[in-house]
Image (cartoon, rainbow, N blue to C red):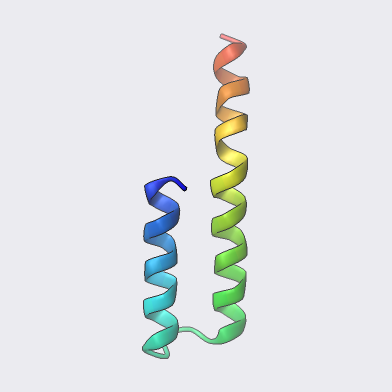
Length: 51
């Protein structure tokens, strides 16, 4: 995982633990963090190959 994904998960977990966000929002944040962590590197690689 890239550091941004890990930091995002830490903040999301902190928000859930301190009732800043609900379980539904936490689930959405985890999915978004996972998607951006997994999808971004291949897209950047593809973009760099085209230059």
